[in-house]
Amino acid sequence: MAILIEKQAKRDAKTEKQARREQDDNIQGERCDDSPRKVEFCMECGAFNVVSAKKLPKDVDVKAVFACNELDLKEVKVYGFDYDYTLACYKPSMDYLLYNLGRQILIEQYKYPKPIGDLQYKPGFAIRGLHYDIQKGVLLKLDSFLQIQLGTVYRGLTSLSNEEVLNLYKNRIIPIAAVEYRHDTDHDGHSKMVQLADLFSVPEMCLLCNVTDYFERNHIDYHPEILFRDVKNSVRFSHPVMHKIVEQNVSEYIKYNPDLGRFFQRLVEADKKLFLVTNSPYRFVNIGMQMLIGKNWKDYFDVIIVQARKPKFFTDKSRPIRLFDEKSGTHVWDRVVKLEKGTIYYEGTVKQLQDMTNWRGHQVLYFGDHPYSDLADVTLEHGWRTGAIINELTHEIDTLNRTDFKRNANWLQMLTGLIEEHQDCEDVDERQVFTKWMQERDFLRNEIKYIFNEQFGSVFRTYHNPTYFSRRLFRFADIYTSNITNLLNYSVNHTFYPRRGVMPHEYISYFV
Ligand SMILES: [Mg+2]
Image (tube, rainbow, N blue to C red; front, side, top):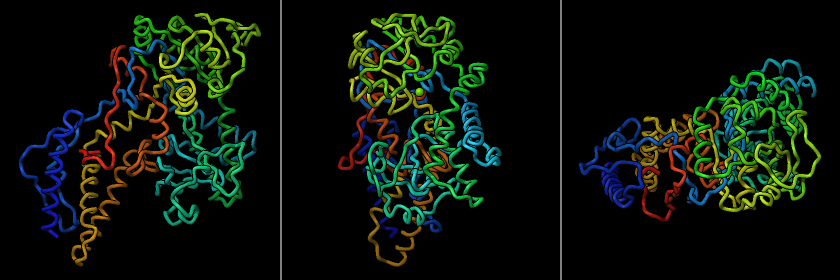
């Protein structure tokens, strides 16, 4: 076995150097030096301490903009923006507020047991992009192949064992009909999954799990689908109250971004047109934008549309666009025949926006935080270019940059290679070592998962695949970044080029 291992290590070193040379400057890791690799065999864990001999990749820039698709900003004439979590990014106090308001409505309007009022918000419990099985009452994470990531299935606050998950689903792969469940179609016999894809749904997931846990602990019968609807409606109905509370103390809830005004100014100076399409009401947006940019914020925008009801704004054909009267705080019935700067509009459809402005196709770049309601239809139906603002990237990249993460991810990759190579060994001693490798691999896989989030791991990855959320994001977003003002790091004529990915049949890449 030892000889096999040394040979393998030499082969790895050779392949790695070759791969690095071939990948040239696209790879973030530094070139390997030519000295022989230090390979130590650890009798206790059956593993190799080769990690220290390997140079780790450079840190990823937390303020970078990442490309899924080539995007030339010179071609972009019009910049569109969503508001919540795109221009206005919220502090954790927003999660507590939505959770507490939803919990209150659940008790007062839906008559849930009063002790639920004692269940506190658990920051960091859930992540965006999880699926909730509304028939089985479990919250789980799926990968891009619709496979359940074992270890990320929760009923309430309790993790289900692998056996429980397999008993429940019979299979790790969920049928597509269950995942892309629509309310207007019949899917008898299938699970029904809903994805919680926006950041406002993170406190909603926590409330759902807390209440489920309460019912389970107290042996109270409940119907998972009804509980899901009640929690969802409670959080949704709490939004008008949330708006009023935030309006009274906006700096308590919105993170100040000193670069936002400069970002808009630069676009205006470059002769770009700007528009805002948000589902939020005018008063709420106005107070937030005044705090972020100043009283003159509207001067930057050529068109402002509030309460747009996305995604219907992008899919409906005939809902009229209306004028919004700032003084009375309501809409005016006058027919809108042209869109004027400085005027606030209400509802309408993207067709009217396009017809009245003649802004079309690839000359429009729209930024939003929701991969479906902000980005999917504008990409698929209207040919707009899209940018996703994913606030979680800050935490994800900070984690990727940790030395312990890099070491573990690196060693996991190498260990998996050794396991693949030596899986057919038959000698008793070799099998023992092999078993320890497998145990260490399981340990490492969990280590690099927990480091992102104890319950669900990374928003973007399951063990080795992209998550379902990532797949949709990469499908619908041309570029993505953690904050809109990260674009200030690039000129207004910049072209974003996607990285050439490595396919399974291609040469070995370094640190993929
Ligand atoms: Mg939003």
